Image 1 (cartoon, helix red, strand yellow):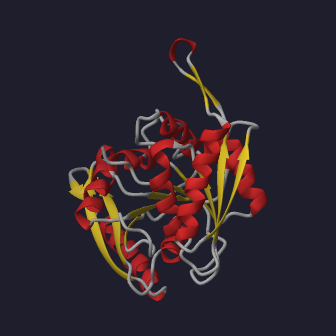
Image 2 (image 1 turned 90 degrees about the vertical axis):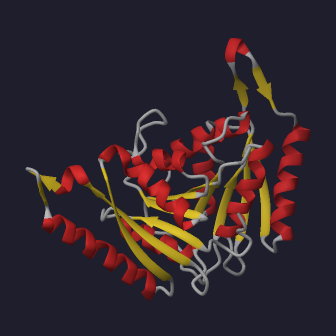
Length: 290
C-alpha cells in the first residue's frame, strides 16, 4: 500500500446512523480531494427488508436515498464518489463489506461507530470488529466529527509497540498527516507483558529508543514534523487516550489487531479499548503480509 500521498481509494460503509455524517466528513478530510475515489457501500439487511415473505419496498427506497445523499455530500466536498447497495443476512454484513473493499482495491475502509455498543470486547461479534478481520487495509472507526477540515494541519497521535508493527503504523500516520504543516506525536507506553506460565517480556531502553528513532526518522523523511514521548504509567489505552486529549490530537493511529506477534497483540487490545475511552477517530493500520 502506497500512502505517501494520502489515501486514494476509500470504501465508506454507511448504515444511516447518526454517526454516518461524521464518517463522511472524515472521508473528505483524510482523502485526497483532487485524486481520491470513494465507493459508498450500504449493506441491505435481507432479514430486515424482507417481511412476511415480501420485499419491503419502502425500506429499499430508503436505502437508495441514503447512499444518494452520502454520494452528494462527498461530491460537494470535492470527492469523486459512486455508490453500491449490497444484500446480505445480518451475519454476513462485515464479510460483504470486506468483499466490496477487495473488489474496489480500497486502501482505506471508513466506518461510523456508536462506540460502546459496537465494541464490547474483542470476543463480541460486532460489525466493526468483523470488518477488521475481513480486510487487510487500514480501517478508520469514527465516533465523532474530526476537529479539522481537509486544508488545516492535523495533529496525529501514533501509538507504536515495536517490532514489525512499526512500518504499517507509520505508513498510516503519514497518510493521515498529508495536510500541510501537520505533525505527528509518536507515543510508546512501556509495559511488562506476561505470557503463559509466568513468562514476562520487558523491553529494554535500547529497544524502545531504537523503535522511536526508526518511526520518527521515517516521518521526517516524509516531510512531516514529528516528536516522540515514552511513558511507563497506566494501562496502554488509558495512557494513549490521555496524551491524545492533552495534546489535542485529531486522530489516533494504532497497530493492527489482526496479527499474531507480541507487539500487535498488545496494540490489538489497545485499539478496542481506545474506542471505549476516547471520542477521537481511531485508525487501525493495515495487516502485515506474511
